[in-house]
Image (cartoon, rainbow, N blue to C red; front, top):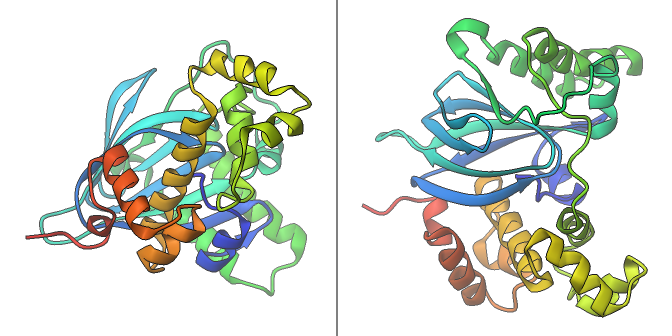
Length: 274
C-alpha cells in the first residue's frame, strides 16, 4: 500500500501537491495480513470487492463503487476478490500529511482510533470525487491556488460525510524504522547503521524495537515484500526487476519469501491460473 517511493509513484501516476493516484489490479483472490499503511489512503473499488479486517469495526466488505478510507498508520488484513470474469480493479489515492492537516485543521482530537471506514457507492457516489481528482491531476493549466483547493475537496467532503481521521500515524519504533527503509528498499540495510541513524547503540536499538514485538530482520523483510506486492498490483514491471529493486538477491528468493508471507505466487497477482 504505502510502499511506493517517490520514483515509483512518478512512474505510476499523477503526483501533485501531496496527492498520488494510481490504479490497482489483481487477478487472483488473496488475503494479505499485517499490511502497513503510513499515509491517509483512499481505495475506490471499480471491479470485484475488498474484505478488510479492522481492529475497531471488525470485518468490512467494500463492493464495486464503494470507497474505503484507511487512516495513517493502519496495520490491516485485507482480501482483494476479483470477479469471476474480471480482475479486481481499484484506484488508490495517497494524501500527504501536510494536505490532510490543512483540511482537518479544525477537527477535534479523538481519544479512540477511528479505524477503517467505508462510504457506500449507492449512498454517497464517491466515484464523483475520484473523477474530480483525476481531472485536476491531469490539467496543467490550472493556477496553483485553484489546483490546491480542488485537491483539498475530497478531504473536506470526507469530513462532511462524518469520516474521522487521526492527524498522524502512531509513532511506534517499527514504523520509524520502516519509514527509513522505504527511502531505499534495495539498499543493503544493516542493523548497526540503522541504530546509528537513530543515535543508539545496537543493543539499545534492539531493545527499543522489542516494544513493537518485531525484530529488525522481520521489519526489513516485511517492508520489502509489501513494496513488491504494491509494484505487482500497480505496474507492469517484470517480476525479476521488482525482486532486485526490492532488495532481493534473486527473483527466486523474492518468489519464495513472497509465497511464504502471502501464501500466493507473485505471478498470480497478475494472472490467474485455471
